[in-house]
Amino acid sequence: MSDDHPAPPARASDADRERVAELLNEALADGRLAVDEHKERIDRLYATKTHAELTPLTADLGTVGRDVERRRSADAVPVERVAPQVAILASTMVRPTGRVRGRMSGVGFFGSARIDLSYATVDEGGVQISAQAIMGSVDIVVPANARVNLTGMPLLGALSPTREPGPADGPRIDIKAVALLGSITVHRAEPEELEQ
Image 1 (cartoon, rainbow, N blue to C red):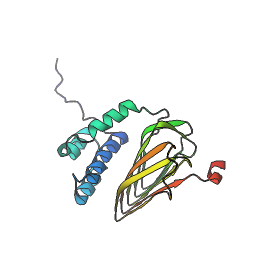
Image 2 (cartoon, rainbow, N blue to C red):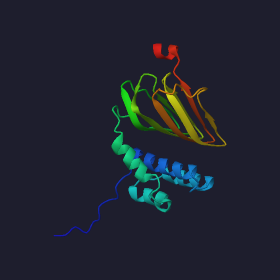
Image 3 (cartoon, one colour):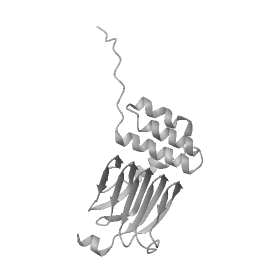
Image 4 (cartoon, helix red, strand yellow):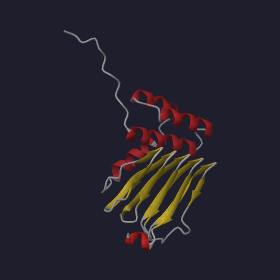
């Protein structure tokens, strides 16, 4: 007896969409996508429901960055897993309190995402944060002793780095940011914030 019904298409998760968004942002940052192409693909991305709909969004971008991503993921498994912070017409916040390292991400799409590392201990491998603000905001709070490297592209938006990069021997936090009609703010934890 054979079954003539094909299996339903696999549904895409928020984490799947976030990985594709990071690839699209990387392609925009290194010039493989123009601003209008990036916006159109991001719009299509957040409307996807299945894996089959995700594939065409990055099919023509090659594998640049994907091999690096796989190596980083294998080398830097987070001690405390920090889920992607995605705020769509809402606000979200994460405040890890243990040891952290590896990749994190925050997306503010007509919303506000906050990643607060003021109570976390950044492992020697450091942290890489991907931040995208599309008509929204991403606020990143870093420990007082962290070395911060913010790179990115404001497209009719704003990137607000910390006033100073931090001590040379401090834990490293690299932030790749894209602000499209939105804002990404990075600031150091103040003592009064830590007391709350």
